[in-house]
Image 1 (spheres, rainbow, N blue to C red):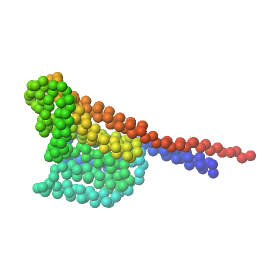
Image 2: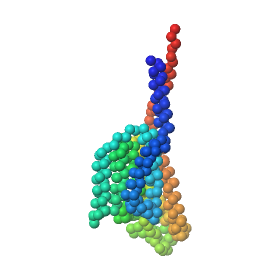
Image 3: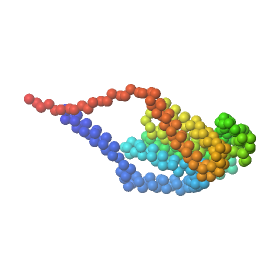
Length: 326
């Protein structure tokens, strides 16, 4: 009896060790060829959407973070490679139904005169999820749903929605920056929409300080929101802490943008306007990333320090010895 227990324990340990050592190259030639064919057909079918998105990443700095999003998705999948490589996939024909519906919606959106271009790349992401459900079933979706949905952060928003979102943020940044500028003796600032008129020592500064679209904070907001989802997913925390960290990305991004506009205003007034343009403007924007990460990290540390959970009692190893018969 004791020998069976020891043998069973050894088998379990060997299984755990095998699971830990799983690598993608262990899929086998047939599986790799199958995945390559499916990926090739998928990329060929949606080649126009992929080209359009990549072109937007290259030409619009507000969406340059899009290059990192697929890499993060692949990293998420790699984090669960042991579970993915050891599950017994069971195809779900519900995924086939979803795939047919998504492709139908995609074609209708193309041929319809009132078609909405934004839904085309979204349909591509939906098709990817439907393919995974069809081929791998719900067990595979359990470990891949977030990497698939995470790709939405790489899809540029329609221009009119992007402008409608950036305008309130520009107004807020201009208003707060104006209040802070007026705290300095000799500076009189007045905000008119997104334009700040400044009088310094009785002399009007020309041109006025304009909170441009690039200073709206939308670029930082989208990139940091994507990063917040990634950090909440990767770091083991209670669910409520993950939700708090995720929700905090929006006010932190807005706060950092207000700091950026305010600092730009002081540089514009007290130093020289040339240091608020070109490479200086871009460097100041990049400097907001460490500030945002610092605030995010501080919040994470504060919640971890404020709420200390009781650690689970570690189980002691049980050593079974075979007692010799007398």
